[in-house]
Structures are given as structure tokens and as C-alpha cells.
Image (cartoon, rainbow, N blue to C red; front, side, top):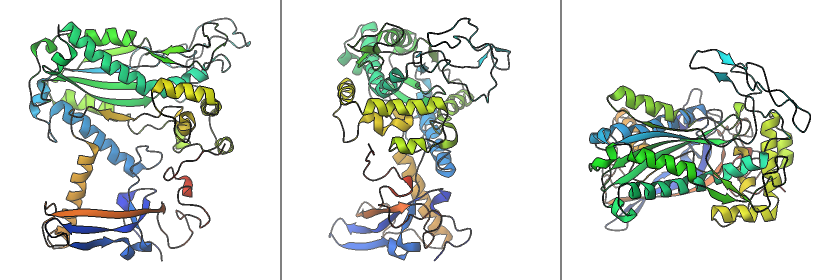
Length: 472
């Protein structure tokens, strides 16, 4: 058995997930169960579904859909739509960029404005303690492979880099909570009083920098107490929120274990260090005078969603062992970041201290090992407040209903459930029973995209699904 030529599978997904199982429809009133769909009648006895990978290097088709959904999610919170009233365009909003601190000088392209002259990378003289130049006088091109790499790898704080990445979610939560308290104090209210008067909503996007650290791009919006459908208080239209946020970003810190204690700078100690934001913080008021401004900001945020952690997609999947890492072709800086995650992740004392700093229980696999392919960052690449706008689930549900409706219309029939009722009838409940059957297109044998028979499903084709076990 082979795939019919030019037959679309899972919306063109490069490596769809294969599922075996069925869907039953249940009558709410009588409890009657009817089989509505089974994968037994599909090609190879499996159903192909999208992988929904956000990385373009992993799956261009799913990445394009994810990017469009992300743009719609951000846009709805600024311009309205998808359940958000259009009056939200009059609510005060700010675009905030939070950066990481410096962990050592890296090669960078310094350009004066867009299209301006390129300046020297690091015009300094002298040698570091390891005998390497402390400066770089080159004017790097945009495609220079050295961009983001440290001038001296031995001086660079790799341990602090991956630890900082791991603690970004905790640092953001501390920032969000402290901002609410600071805004309440500036407005002369308690936190409870603030929540009865206004609500701070946000959408946050993480961007992996070339030097291997995460930056956050955030849209913060002030609504009334009932969310986007209620008017914000008058004091929110000024700079009170922005001033409070600047003070919080400059002072908030999360205690963390110091992986680089005793390094050359002599400023660290074995007692730990404070994880903070970098000095480069950008807080701008969003001017929503027209659809052009709204679309520009939304596109700027959404374009970061499909960026992978490394060029070429070499780290699109978890690194399960140092032996597997040795088989990958990576830049030295990227390789050392992953090796640092493994070195620290195999240290029980440091792992316990990091879990304590995060306030989470330790899992079966140390956190730095699980997220070594993203240099320690294990947070969500896009997250938002509950009432900021719509959700990915809602967008996918609408698209699924639309596809079924169009498919039925093209077949000359009405989309109905197993009881003959129109799709979406509240008297029918859908129950699906599915089992993971592999990844990739089923080609009727062990050809391209099919899993070899001697590999368990959780490990097939390098799949991140199933039980994750590091090979120590």
C-alpha cells in the first residue's frame, strides 16, 4: 500500500503524527453510543494529524499555521475580534522588551540605524586572562557565523547563561506580580482595590537570541475590572503604569544557585546570585490610531514564534545523550551551551537548588537535561492572560468546524453527527479513544517516514512524544 500521488495528508504537515483509534458519539439524553469514525478504514489503519510544531525548520506547513494563529491571537487583543470587543483599541497598552544581562562579550553587528554604517564589533585592546584579545575590530556581515559567539569561550559564563534561561519563567512571574503591586501603590490603592478597578492583561512572546539567551516581548494592556469589555480607569491613560513597570524591571530579582562560583571575575560566591533583567529595557506606548499600527505591532510579535533555537533546525528535538550531541553538526558556542546543561543537570546538588529556586518539584528527568536543546529554557514561547484575547484552542476549533462544513458541502451533503443532528448539537457528546502509532507518513512498509519495527513508539524517528528518558 502506498500513498496516492498528490493526496494531501494532515494539511501538508511534513511529519504528521499517526494515531489509531476511534470516535464515538453519545446521546446525552438516552446514553446511546454510536461509532462515528474509526482509523481502521484509513490508509494503513491510522489517522494522520498535524504535528503543530511552531518551528519552520521542523515543519513549514504547521509553522505557517501556528504563525497565523499567533498573529490573530495578538491582533484580537489590540484591535478586537474573535470575541474581543472593538472598543479595546481605546484601552492603554504598552509594548515592552525585556532582555537578558551580559554573560560576557560576544561578537555582534553594531549598525547605526537601519541602513546606516556598521561599526567595529568591540573596539578594545589587550588580552584576557586566557591570552585571547578582549576586543574585535571587525565589521561583521549579517551572515557572519561568529555573531553571538563569545570573544573568549573560557571567560564566558555558560553556567549562568543556561541557569538564567531556566529561571526566566520565575523572573517573569515575579515581574508580573510586582508590577501589579507597584501600579496599585502608585494609584493609591491596595492590590485588592486595584482588581476592583482595573485589570492588567498581557501577551508574552519569547525570542531566542543568537548568543543563546531568551528575550521577552510583551504587550501589556489595562482594562476595566470586567476585562476588555469594560472601560479602564482614567489614571491608566497617563504614564503611571509605564513608570511603575520601569521601577519594577530595574529592581526585581530571583535568588538562584550560582553555577559559575569562583570564576575569573571574582565577584561570585558559593551562596548564589540574583537573576535579574538586563539593562536594555524598552517600554513604548502603543498608539492605536489605525489598523496600520495594530497590524505592525502584531506582525512584529508574531514573527518570533517560528524561530528555532539554532539555525538549520539541528536542535528542533531534545538531546537525549552526550553521544547523540556528538553526532550533531553544531557551532562551538551552541555545543558548549548544551554541554553545560548536561554538566549541571547531572549534578544532584545543583539540580535540587535550581528546582528550589523555581519552586517546583523535581521531575524524573532533571530540568536542564530535558531542555538542553533550548539551552535550559523550558517556558512557553507564547503565553497570555486569560482575558487578553482568544486562545489557540478556539482558533483550531473554528478551523476544524469550517473544514468539516466545507468538506460536507463539496460532497453535496449536510454535516451531521452519528444521530443525524447538525454538527455542534449540544445533545451529542464526542468521545475519542486514540493511541500513538508513530510519526511520519505511513507508506505501507518501512520506507521513508515509517518507523523501523524494532523501535518503541516513544523513541521512533526521534519523536519527543511518549516517555522521555535521558540516556545518562
